[in-house]
Image (cartoon, rainbow, N blue to C red; front, side):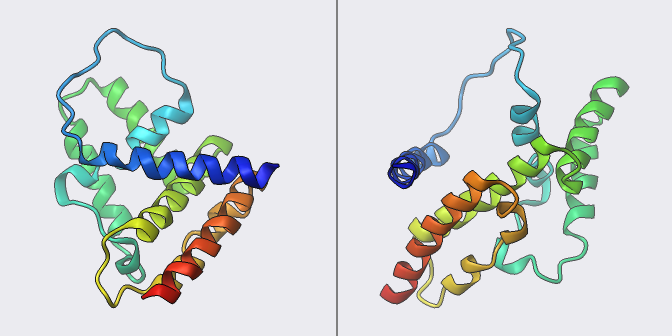
Length: 164
Protein backbone atom coordinates (compact mmCIF):
# COMPACT_ATOMS: atom_id res chain seq x y z
CA UNK A 1 0.00 0.00 0.00
CA UNK A 2 2.70 2.51 1.00
CA UNK A 3 4.68 1.80 -2.17
CA UNK A 4 1.63 2.50 -4.32
CA UNK A 5 1.05 5.81 -2.54
CA UNK A 6 4.69 6.74 -3.03
CA UNK A 7 4.53 5.86 -6.74
CA UNK A 8 1.42 7.99 -7.18
CA UNK A 9 3.09 10.84 -5.34
CA UNK A 10 6.14 10.54 -7.59
CA UNK A 11 3.85 10.69 -10.63
CA UNK A 12 2.42 13.91 -9.21
CA UNK A 13 5.93 15.36 -8.74
CA UNK A 14 6.83 14.45 -12.32
CA UNK A 15 3.70 16.16 -13.60
CA UNK A 16 4.22 19.29 -11.52
CA UNK A 17 7.78 19.57 -12.83
CA UNK A 18 6.19 21.54 -15.66
CA UNK A 19 5.87 24.44 -13.23
CA UNK A 20 9.61 24.97 -13.60
CA UNK A 21 8.94 26.03 -17.19
CA UNK A 22 6.24 28.57 -16.28
CA UNK A 23 7.25 32.19 -15.96
CA UNK A 24 5.90 33.47 -12.63
CA UNK A 25 4.28 36.88 -12.96
CA UNK A 26 2.39 37.42 -9.69
CA UNK A 27 3.79 38.34 -6.31
CA UNK A 28 2.21 37.70 -2.94
CA UNK A 29 2.17 40.54 -0.44
CA UNK A 30 -0.68 39.70 1.90
CA UNK A 31 1.59 38.43 4.67
CA UNK A 32 0.71 34.74 4.51
CA UNK A 33 2.21 32.93 7.47
CA UNK A 34 4.38 30.21 5.86
CA UNK A 35 5.78 27.49 8.05
CA UNK A 36 9.48 27.23 8.82
CA UNK A 37 9.80 24.26 6.47
CA UNK A 38 8.46 26.23 3.51
CA UNK A 39 10.69 29.19 4.33
CA UNK A 40 13.74 26.95 4.28
CA UNK A 41 12.57 25.47 0.97
CA UNK A 42 12.44 28.91 -0.59
CA UNK A 43 15.55 30.41 0.99
CA UNK A 44 18.00 27.58 0.35
CA UNK A 45 18.36 28.27 -3.40
CA UNK A 46 18.08 32.07 -3.42
CA UNK A 47 21.83 32.65 -3.67
CA UNK A 48 21.79 30.87 -7.02
CA UNK A 49 19.91 33.84 -8.48
CA UNK A 50 23.22 35.65 -8.91
CA UNK A 51 25.80 33.10 -10.09
CA UNK A 52 23.48 30.27 -11.02
CA UNK A 53 23.25 26.65 -10.01
CA UNK A 54 26.11 24.19 -10.12
CA UNK A 55 24.79 20.89 -11.49
CA UNK A 56 24.83 18.12 -8.91
CA UNK A 57 27.20 16.00 -11.00
CA UNK A 58 29.73 18.87 -10.99
CA UNK A 59 29.55 19.71 -7.27
CA UNK A 60 32.11 17.16 -6.12
CA UNK A 61 35.30 19.02 -5.32
CA UNK A 62 33.62 22.43 -5.55
CA UNK A 63 34.58 23.49 -2.03
CA UNK A 64 33.57 27.11 -2.68
CA UNK A 65 29.99 26.33 -3.81
CA UNK A 66 28.56 26.91 -0.36
CA UNK A 67 30.67 30.01 0.25
CA UNK A 68 29.67 31.46 -3.13
CA UNK A 69 25.96 30.83 -2.56
CA UNK A 70 26.11 32.36 0.91
CA UNK A 71 27.94 35.44 -0.39
CA UNK A 72 25.40 35.77 -3.20
CA UNK A 73 22.54 35.48 -0.73
CA UNK A 74 24.07 38.24 1.39
CA UNK A 75 24.20 40.41 -1.74
CA UNK A 76 20.53 39.70 -2.45
CA UNK A 77 19.54 40.48 1.12
CA UNK A 78 21.50 43.73 1.27
CA UNK A 79 18.48 45.98 0.81
CA UNK A 80 16.51 44.37 3.65
CA UNK A 81 16.51 45.64 7.23
CA UNK A 82 19.09 43.94 9.45
CA UNK A 83 16.56 41.85 11.33
CA UNK A 84 15.06 40.35 8.16
CA UNK A 85 18.47 39.89 6.58
CA UNK A 86 19.76 38.00 9.63
CA UNK A 87 16.61 35.88 9.83
CA UNK A 88 16.83 34.79 6.18
CA UNK A 89 20.55 34.15 6.48
CA UNK A 90 19.94 32.04 9.59
CA UNK A 91 17.43 29.92 7.64
CA UNK A 92 19.99 29.43 4.88
CA UNK A 93 22.66 28.46 7.42
CA UNK A 94 20.21 26.09 9.07
CA UNK A 95 19.64 24.36 5.73
CA UNK A 96 23.30 24.32 4.77
CA UNK A 97 24.35 22.84 8.10
CA UNK A 98 21.28 20.57 8.34
CA UNK A 99 20.99 21.78 11.90
CA UNK A 100 17.29 21.14 12.42
CA UNK A 101 14.77 18.44 11.63
CA UNK A 102 13.13 20.76 9.10
CA UNK A 103 16.42 21.55 7.40
CA UNK A 104 17.34 17.87 7.16
CA UNK A 105 13.95 17.07 5.65
CA UNK A 106 14.21 19.89 3.10
CA UNK A 107 17.75 18.80 2.24
CA UNK A 108 16.61 15.22 1.68
CA UNK A 109 13.65 16.32 -0.43
CA UNK A 110 15.91 18.60 -2.45
CA UNK A 111 18.24 15.69 -3.24
CA UNK A 112 15.30 13.48 -4.25
CA UNK A 113 13.90 16.19 -6.51
CA UNK A 114 17.27 16.45 -8.25
CA UNK A 115 17.33 12.72 -8.91
CA UNK A 116 13.74 12.77 -10.20
CA UNK A 117 14.72 15.62 -12.53
CA UNK A 118 17.73 13.63 -13.77
CA UNK A 119 15.54 10.60 -14.40
CA UNK A 120 13.03 12.49 -16.51
CA UNK A 121 15.24 15.18 -18.03
CA UNK A 122 16.46 15.42 -21.59
CA UNK A 123 20.02 14.61 -20.56
CA UNK A 124 23.06 14.26 -22.80
CA UNK A 125 23.70 10.74 -24.10
CA UNK A 126 26.70 10.35 -21.80
CA UNK A 127 24.79 11.32 -18.64
CA UNK A 128 25.99 9.28 -15.66
CA UNK A 129 22.82 7.83 -14.13
CA UNK A 130 24.95 5.79 -11.72
CA UNK A 131 25.66 9.13 -10.02
CA UNK A 132 22.00 9.24 -8.91
CA UNK A 133 22.36 6.01 -6.96
CA UNK A 134 24.66 7.63 -4.39
CA UNK A 135 23.74 11.31 -4.68
CA UNK A 136 22.45 12.72 -1.41
CA UNK A 137 22.12 9.33 0.28
CA UNK A 138 23.13 10.62 3.69
CA UNK A 139 20.30 13.15 3.49
CA UNK A 140 17.60 10.68 2.45
CA UNK A 141 18.38 7.75 4.74
CA UNK A 142 17.51 9.52 8.00
CA UNK A 143 13.76 9.66 7.36
CA UNK A 144 11.87 6.39 6.75
CA UNK A 145 9.54 8.02 4.20
CA UNK A 146 12.43 9.56 2.27
CA UNK A 147 14.23 6.24 2.37
CA UNK A 148 11.16 4.50 0.91
CA UNK A 149 10.88 7.12 -1.81
CA UNK A 150 14.59 6.77 -2.49
CA UNK A 151 14.28 3.02 -3.10
CA UNK A 152 11.64 3.57 -5.76
CA UNK A 153 13.57 6.40 -7.41
CA UNK A 154 16.73 4.27 -7.40
CA UNK A 155 14.85 1.56 -9.30
CA UNK A 156 13.74 4.17 -11.82
CA UNK A 157 17.34 5.36 -12.11
CA UNK A 158 18.51 1.83 -12.87
CA UNK A 159 15.86 1.50 -15.58
CA UNK A 160 16.86 4.83 -17.11
CA UNK A 161 20.55 3.86 -16.99
CA UNK A 162 19.80 0.63 -18.85
CA UNK A 163 17.96 2.54 -21.61
CA UNK A 164 20.87 4.83 -22.32
